[in-house]
Length: 238
Image 1 (cartoon, rainbow, N blue to C red):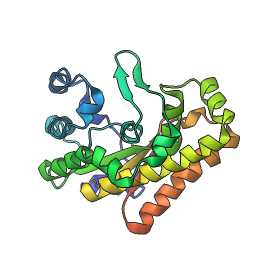
Image 2 (image 1 turned 90 degrees about the vertical axis):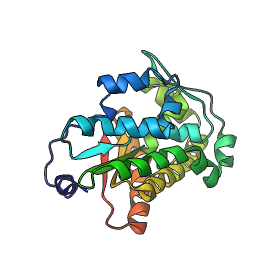
Image 3 (image 1 turned 30 degrees about the vertical axis):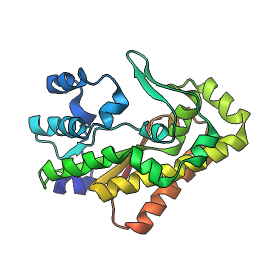
Image 4 (image 1 turned 45 degrees about the vertical axis):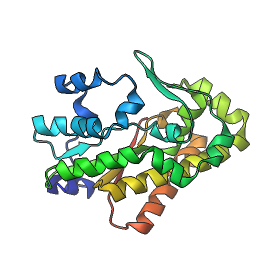
C-alpha cells in the first residue's frame, strides 16, 4: 500500500484528486465505445482491469479505484439495471420476494468478475500503489431501488413513507448484501473500501440516523470485527 495513502487513512490530511477510471481519457473512451451495456462493462474482467490502471499509467497517483458501479448490488439481487445516455441509471421494477430469495452464493457468483478484476488489478498494480474498492451505502442503494433512477426528494420520501414495513425489510436485505460485497472485495485484494452515500443529502434530519447512520455503522462494525485494522472511508454527499 502507498505510504502517503496510508497516512491519509490515518487522519493526516490528503489532497484528494479522485476520479474513477479517468473517463475523459481517450484510451478509456476507446474501450467504452466497444461496450454497449455498462453493467456488462463493469463485469468484463479484462476491460475493468485495463480502465482501472489507465490513470495510474498516465499519472503518478497513489491509488487506483476499481472500475465498477454501486448499482451492481441491485443487479445481483435481480433488478434490471440499465444506463441511458444523458439520463443515467434506469432500474426496472423490483420484487421484494426476489430479493428475499437471493442466496449469498448466487449473489457472489453474479459479481465474481468484480472480484476477479480486483485480483487481477492488484497483481498488475505496483505494490507501492493502493487499490480502492467501494460500495454504495444502504440508504443510497435503497433510493435507487425504490425510485428506479436518480431521485427528486418528493418522490423518494413519498415511496419510503408509503410502505414502512417493506422499506425496513428491504433496508435489512441491502445492508446484508453490501457487507457481503465489501467482504469479497477485501478477500480479492482491495487495500481499502470506500462507502458512497451519494443521496444522504436528501434525508430530513429526523430520518438520518435510522436510514443512513445506523445501517452504515452496522456494516463497518461487522467488517472491523473480522478485520480490525482494515481501513475504511466514507463519502457523504450533502
